[in-house]
Image (tube, rainbow, N blue to C red; front, side, top):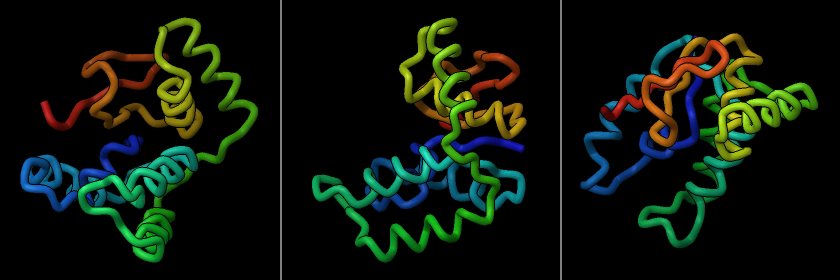
Length: 135
């Protein structure tokens, strides 16, 4: 199972010309059956996808509909255990809290790979390998 970070979801809906190649790489990821997300990722997606300053903001109903579609994937809830793991990851590896929470959610679901543009490509953190699909 692979875990998808928020930026993967955001590139999949981008309509800007300079992000076309990234969109082309993310859409096939979202067509897989072995994806996982977290509530945090879905929340971040909604906030970023609908923000007025975005070049192509989504209306609420479309953003909410996409989130409902992605609920077909395994979704990690925000739990105390994920919070505690995120704090440990942050202390041990120096990631931001929010990035640490993404890694903790991936670990909680048993994901071996985390697809993200924002983290260190190729780095392994507590059994989760970070993959930047745009490299």
